[in-house]
Length: 323
Image (cartoon, rainbow, N blue to C red):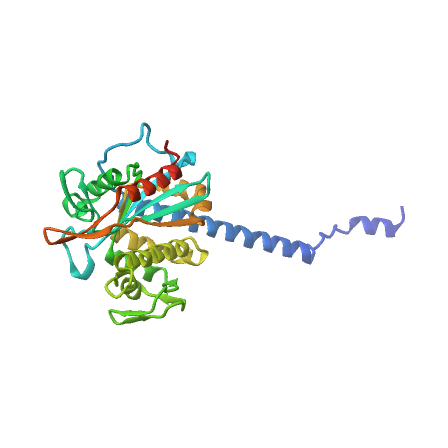
């Protein structure tokens, strides 16, 4: 063996330097892992915050059961919700208040349709649990959400599975937490210092949304026109909550819900509805329960005709797949 060969063998082997592409791949992997951990922490915090809020706003109600078995939204069954907009907290009120807004939602994932029925607050009906005939919005003043649920069940002859109660101050706060909602007015009017132009899409903050949804005396359709505008605010808010733009502001939204809302929907119920019923929420049918204005002993009531009640009740039963 010659000297050159021995010299070559004695030289230590040199490690290959990692290529630029390997370094880049390693860097990307580290960044990806950091992002994954950050997203995981964010998701966990959102989950924790939402769970905490739903625990705070959960309030069960005593109601007359109209189903043989309770509804299971995790099984994608059609369900109903009573929306109560109460005037507690509005204009500085601290008393129980009344439900100036009453809407029934029926959601059917099989037909991918949601129906919203507006009930006039002056509807003359039996107040269940009190045994008297009165305006339907007085049910809340007499017995809160429980009496309202039972009274609406009796009026429409359907089961009310869930309720959501929001006070008027909550409407303002929720809209503000969403950074406003967009509506297109069906008529021009001014109210409480705000002006709205027919056909002109505009973004409303919380105070403007309240003004938009309150006016009724200058509306040619009276309270029915006001209810239509209230439905606009609700639908605009629902669409905004479902949008990606609201995710980063979720804490502000949860805070307003915690302070201004009560419901018997659990966190698991809400999660199931979000996962299983999104198609139905995008296809909404609006129904207005109408009554004839009449005075009884000098007090104004809306008398709903039996045929009108039967038609609306039948439509809701079909939505809920009730025979």
